[in-house]
Length: 263
Ligand code: NAP
Image (tube, rainbow, N blue to C red; front, side, top):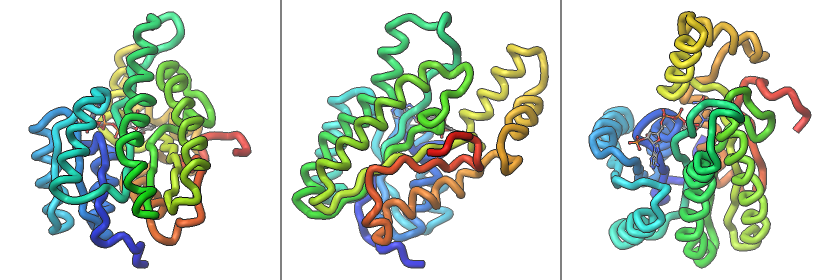
C-alpha cells in the first residue's frame, strides 16, 4: 500500500533509539525524507548508519535536546534552510524516571512536564504555521498508554503526558480546516532499551530477575506479549499517510489490549 508520503519532509525527534528510531526507519521505508534528532551525537551516528543500511535512503541528523527551546528553534530553522518546511512531525522525548508520589519533589514534576509536554508544544509552535500555509501537515505525538490508564510507579509520566492529550486535541481543532491533522499515539509496553531498563529496575527493587518483570507484565496484556517497535512504527506511518487525512484529534492505543477502559 502506497502511503502517499514519498519525498515528504519528516522530522522525528528523540529518534536515535527505541520507538523514535523505529518510526524514522519506517517513514524512510515509505519514501519520506527523514530527519532525526537526539542529544547524543554518537548515538545519532549509529542510528543513522542503521537506518541507511535498512532503507538505503539518506537520513539527516541533528543533535538537539528537545527540552531546550532555543535548540529546537535553531534545529528547525536549519532544517527549513537546508531541506524545506517540515510536513510530517513526530514528537517524542525520553521518559521521566519511575517512582511514586513520595519519591519526587515539585521540581521533578516540572522537569517531567518540560520533557514530555513543553517539548511537544515548542516543536509544534515552530512547525504548525508553515503546515497551515502549505495546507498539508501531519503531527503525531508519541505519548503512552498511561494517558488512558495510569501505570503503577510511573507517576511523573502519568501526570505529564495527559497534558499532551489536552494540547493535541485543542490544536487539532484549531488547524483542522488547514489540511493539518494532529493525533497522539499511545504505546503500551514495547520492547526498547527503556523497557529493558524498567525490567532491570524491577529486578533490582524486588530481588528477582528481569524475566519476572516480563512474565508479570504479559499476564496483564490480552495478547499475552509486549509489542514490537515495528508494529508501533507501522501504526505511526498509517497516521501520517494520505489515507488517514480524515483522522484528527485521536489518541490511538497500540498496546495489545493492555488498557482495559472503553476509550
Ligand atoms: P528509549 O529506548 O530510551 O529511547 C529514548 C530516545 O529519546 C533516545 O534516542 C534518546 O537519545 C532520546 N532522548 C531522550 N531525551 C531526549 C531529549 N531531551 N531530547 C532529545 N532526545 C532525547 O525510549 P523508548 O522506549 O523508545 O521510549 C520513547 C518514549 O515513549 C519515552 O518517552 C517513553 O517513556 C515512551 N513510552 C515507551 C514505551 C515502551 O514500552 N517503550 C511505552 C510507553 C511510553 P539521547 O539520549 O541521545 O537524547
